Image (cartoon, rainbow, N blue to C red; front, top):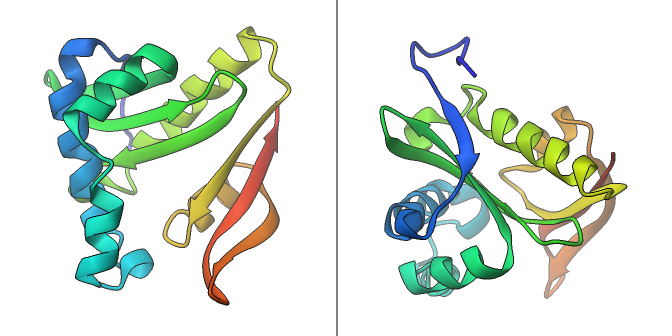
Length: 159
């Protein structure tokens, strides 16, 4: 895949255990940039980041499908989905968002899920990612609230 918007070669491939540290860095960097979701609330941000560790990524690599986007052998994006079709995360380095990398990773998941005979992908989108998923053919199923505050959207995609 060659990004049309950025002069870079991007490769999408299955993540390896040796990628765990760099994957955690990409996830953490991207989450910090999701200001619409955490509103720079330190306590909320801390809670969100607590789970995004190298050790947890290693565990996820054992139980989930994880693809990474790389450019010049550096991880610039990561997408993970569960065996039953739930996309659990999809992050691109903040400086490279909007350049087709998330779309390329999502397309790799769509192909993989179809090959595994899944008929649907679903996820809980953040406020930040809602428009991206809508542009990729996902439909909103329900709003997700916390103490009456909108925090995201349940979404699905028919394969």
